[in-house]
Length: 121
Image 1 (cartoon, rainbow, N blue to C red):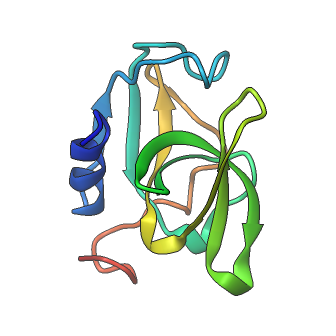
Image 2: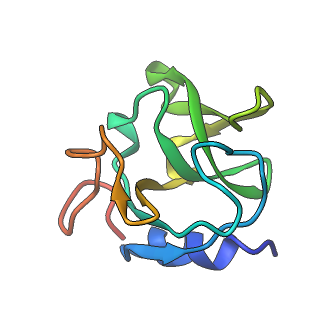
Image 3: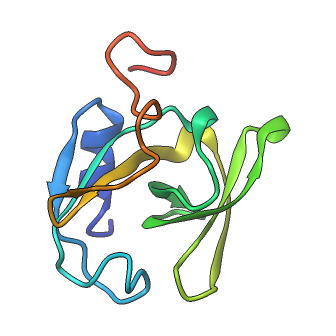
């Protein structure tokens, strides 16, 4: 189980979670150990460029949405250095990054899943 699995479980359960991910694959958008806040997401509202917490091929990533397949209910996940992690279904997209280092990320309004939204546990 990876470091982000516990966070993914909490977000999938409806919690908004703040944590400090490690690694350099998202620089300069997110630096290693920089605080981020991730909220539950409605995957059908995602756009290319959103930063999401998603499981791809068994691994949880905090990476970018790099392509959309609305008909297939899936998104492509990539890091900020050009590496594509792969496609994943909407059910495995747990949350959207709404803030980095306390600064709200633009474009997240209306994408956060609230209590009573479709897909709530």
